Amino acid sequence: MEATVVRTGTEGKTWGGGSKSPLKASYGKMMMWYFITSDALTFSAFLAAYGFSRYKFIDSWPIADEVFNHFPFMHGTDAPMYYVALMTFILIFSSVTMVLAVDAGHQMKKSKVTLYMFLTIIGGAIFLGSQAWEWKNFIKGEYGAVETNGGQIIQFVDAEGERVALEKVAKVLPGDRVEHESKNGLWYVTDDSALPTYSIDEVKEGFKESNYLVRTQMLDENGAKTILSREESLAMINDNAARVVEGANLTRNEYGPPLFADFFFFITGFHGFHVFTGVLINIIIFFNVIIGTYEKRKSYEMVEKVGLYWHFVDLVWVFVFTFFYLV
View 1 (cartoon, rainbow, N blue to C red):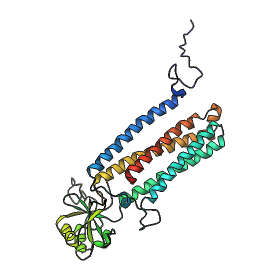
View 2 (view 1 turned 90 degrees about the vertical axis):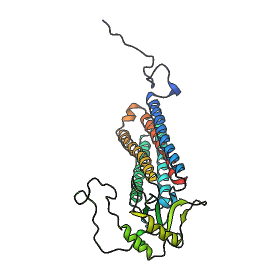
View 3 (view 1 turned 135 degrees about the horizontal axis):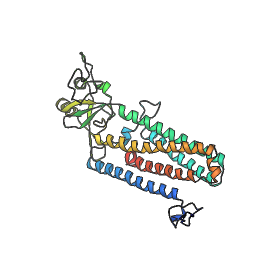
View 4 (view 1 turned 45 degrees about the vertical axis):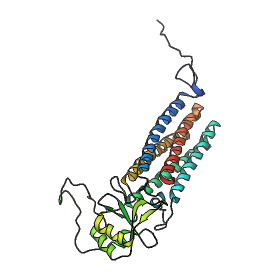
C-alpha cells in the first residue's frame, strides 16, 4: 500500500508556513520579526515605567552629567557623557559592520563576510566591557553622600559649588569600628550591613570644622540642585544626618532616589544581556562562515537574520541612551 504524502505546494521554496509567503520573507525571518516585535514591547514597558517614576520625582531626579562623568585613565577629570558617547559610537559602528556583512553575504563573498562579522563581534565585546566598567564606577561612587532621617540624599560642595568627597569632610575619630555580622550582631538586621569608609559621627565632626556647604537633591527653578547656606547646612547635618552612603545599589544611591539606580541596573543590564546573547550568536555564525556552511547552502540568510537582531539591539540602546543620559 502506497503511503500518502501531504503536499502544501511550497516544496523547494523558502517559506514553509503556508500557501502564501508574507512580504516574500522566509519562515525564519518572519519568526525573527515576531521576536523583535515582542521584545520591543517589553523594552517599551520598562522605559515607560522609568519615565513615569522620573516624572513623579522630577524635582529630585539625579542629573546625568554629574553621575556619568568618568573616563578611563582620567581620574578626577569631569568628562560628562564622554564615555557613554564613545560606547554608543562603538555599538552603532558595529551595526554598520553588520550591514556590510549582510551585503557581502548577498554577493556570496565569504572573506568579506568573515571580516565584517569579526569586527561586529569585537565591537559588541568592547561595548560589554565598557558597560561593566561604567557599572563598577556607578556602584563604587566617587564622592559619597549622607542620607537624612527622611530618606533624602545630601551632598557636600565648596564655596564655588563644586562637589567635595567625604574624605575631605570627615574627621577620623579614635575608636574601633566593627562591621555588623551575624556572629557579632543581630543576624536578622540587614540595614547598614556594609561598613562605610567613615561613620556619620566622623562626617558631622569634620563638617563642623570646615567651610563646606550642603547641597540637597531638590532642584531649583534653573534645574540645578539647591545649595543651603552655612547655617542651614549645619542645622541639616546636626539634626537630620542619619547615615553615610557611598556609591549606588538597589536600596541606596548617593546620587538621589534609589529608583534611579534600580531602573539603571535593570534596564541597562537587560539590554546588556541582549548584547551578550547577540555576541554569542554572532560567534557561532562567524565560525559557520569560516567552515563554509553557508557557501554549501548557497545562501547567507542566517547572517541576515542575526543581523536583524543586532540592529534591534542597537536601536534599543538609542532609546536607553536617550532616556538615561540625555533627557
